[in-house]
Image 1 (cartoon, rainbow, N blue to C red):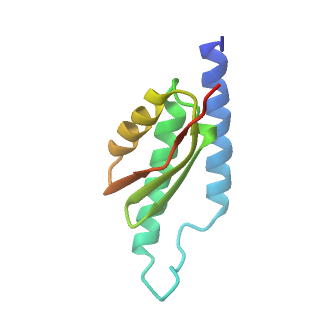
Image 2 (cartoon, rainbow, N blue to C red):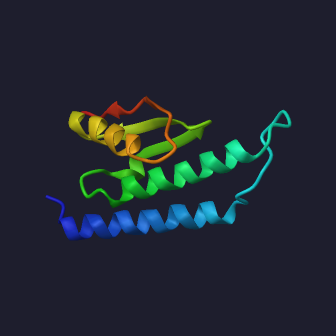
Length: 111
């Protein structure tokens, strides 16, 4: 059994490392094809918000979930330990401002 305090601490450490990596990237960049960076900026902000929301949830193992955002559509890949976690992740992502759709490709990992 995982101590909830330790799990929350690990989620916080994971969140800090993700945010550190993301802050190292420039927040303004051109999308291939000459498209304006407004979509890229919005997607970047959505991804940050999704990662933060997942990391804050004590029931979700955020380090096994990969998030990509394309024009407000969130693509989730990776694994979850229990079936209900896949639904929970989708509900959390849906609550993030700016999300226009979710492609939930999360896999249930049998133990």
